[in-house]
Amino acid sequence: MVEMSGLVSHEKFLCRLTISSLNLLRVIAEQEGCSIEELNAGRVCDWFLKDKLKREQNLDSAVLQWDESNFQL
Image (tube, rainbow, N blue to C red; front, side, top):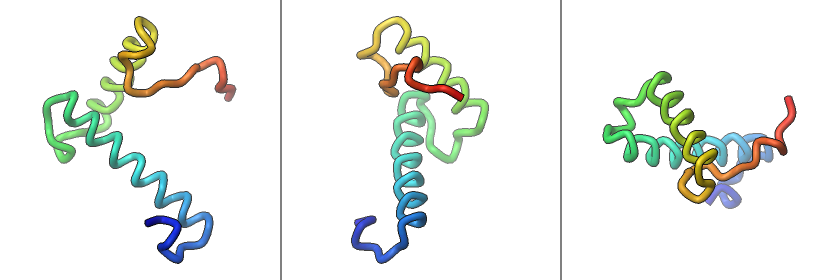
């Protein structure tokens, strides 16, 4: 759908990012037992910490599957 939208490349990127974020927010809300509307910055940060702990304990149990050694800031 994004490719057929007629958006320019940077708009397509932002559109994909927004859709991806929405999909992740749905997962977070489901796992936290609340609606997306009930999520706030604190709940999202808490979820990321929980998911990080899952990843450290067992890579397959985490939602986000990435190797932090690949990221450099």
